[in-house]
Image 1 (cartoon, rainbow, N blue to C red):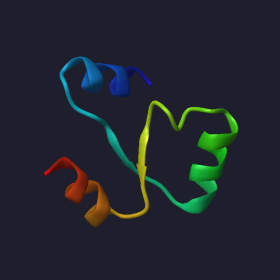
Image 2: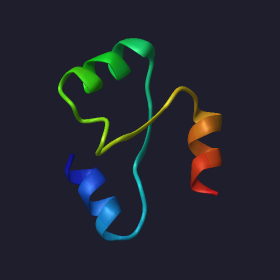
Image 3: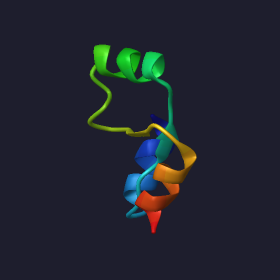
Length: 49
């Protein structure tokens, strides 16, 4: 969360590559609003271009 906050302060986002289990857990604790979860490295890279 600290890295996500630092990225947001700098005007960016922290792209996190996760599998379905991690994504489900993040949504369970309602952190998906703060974290940019991506299913693959390619998708994460595409979102930072």
